[in-house]
Amino acid sequence: MFTGIVEELGRLESLDNGRLRIGATQVLVDVAIGESIAVNGCCLTVVAFGDDWSEADVSGETISRTSLSMVEPGDGINLERAVAAPRNWPQLARWGSGTSTETRRAMWARSTSGMVAQTGTQVMPSRD
Figure 1 (cartoon, rainbow, N blue to C red):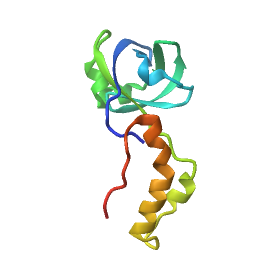
Figure 2: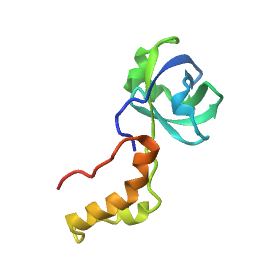
Figure 3: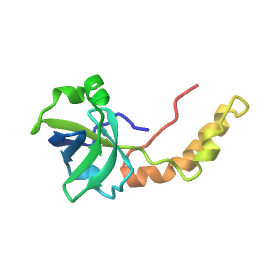
Figure 4: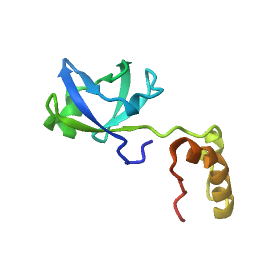
């Protein structure tokens, strides 16, 4: 899941044989193989990375249907890390019609309280 807030303007280094290489620093802090990064809004999976670059495999279909078809090496690209799921994600995912709005908001507040310290951004649930 992504917030839609661009964290960093990276650079497309190359796109060869289905392997996209981006130059970046901020979104690569604590990155791991298998994590998702939105590249110009397109969710891609990190398959390799270094201190200032990462790579993702991308299909021709994905390229043709996204803005990746319009970028060339050296172009700036918008980058965003995926939002980390709270530890009690299974409990949050079970919210349903039987859970009151007040209860959902209280559960959400408890589950996201650490996110403010980590990101500096308060995440709030949508209003019903």
